[in-house]
Image (cartoon, rainbow, N blue to C red):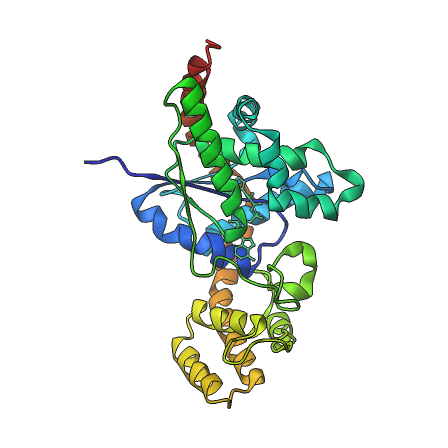
Length: 329
Ligand code: TYM
């Protein structure tokens, strides 16, 4: 039997995940768990590169794990763990930093955005962030990295780092590939020229934990036509709503609204109601599973600890190989 390929991905514990995180990342993890060795991490070390309240962090980690599990990840099939419980991540990041050109880090879009957002307090972790992400991926001999489009540049850098290391110290790392979905870039509801993101504020995203009333209100206020869209093209807001309609399984509605749009008879209030129906239909069972899981936090922490125990030996084996290649042992 041929060995299964490995998939690795991570999500920052940002409190509430939104439908962008779900459609861009988690949704594509679900089929992978059946034919890949899957390793998924709650990347707490990445989350502390921006200001945060220490008292909230454990709760945020638990929330992310609940989202993973309620979305359908099966802890019997996949390894789920918290990044800081496997110290090899930061250890490898240091070693990789010695082959990573600083100029590459300065090019990273996410760094530029975050540096602008937190210009009063740019810490070193914000710029070295992609090296830690490369370490996350390379520790597990990863073949596939299923993420949203905003992380593609970081995966590209990971490939560069892996190749540079292999060239300098001999074949050590598997060079991973990015995997994107059709919904690789879900846009903000309130400003569809920008990516849906928690940091923009609540009216910009639908959280996986938003109740029906909130979901309907947010979608009803979504920006549609903003003018300036060339004839025959969908404006960014309308394109985003169509994409959501498709992703949340309203195929018949999708075709109906597509025809209405082509014929110039579309009513955006109806399109929005159909999008909200699809999201509510999808998130209701998710939220029910999530509330049931949330009643037993100890079980969730045990799953995460068990995951770290499974991840550690793989990470340790890679570290031994890396140190040997570098002449350190
Ligand atoms: P993070 O926590 O910002 O986002 C988690 C995942 O959600 C995707 N995503 C989106 N996809 C589509 N549309 C959107 N609007 C949207 N917003 C977010 C992201 O692309 C990501 O897949 N650096 C990473 C976390 C990380 C990681 C890793 C990922 C750390 N180490 C190793 C993969 C492999 C991040 O900040 O994702």
